[in-house]
Length: 73
Image (cartoon, rainbow, N blue to C red; front, top):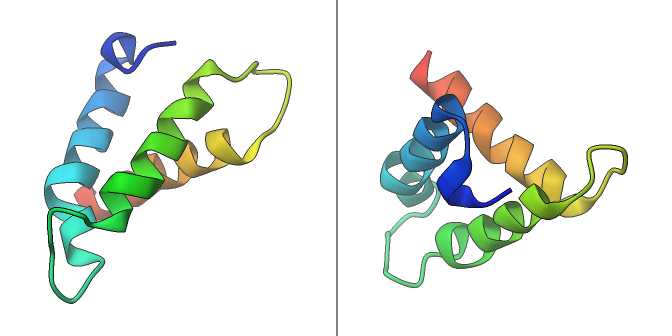
């Protein structure tokens, strides 16, 4: 699945992560924020994983979505 074809709730949660949460994870938000430059690409790799198998990339994707869901509630 491509990030462009994500269901709307997941798209909003990823947007919330990029715009609000990832910058608050560090003391000083910089353009090379590892929450965006490392975690997000790893999470998006999880979208290509089979739903029958578990992998670290899919776990990171669910973690990012859960963080956004908890903070947005």
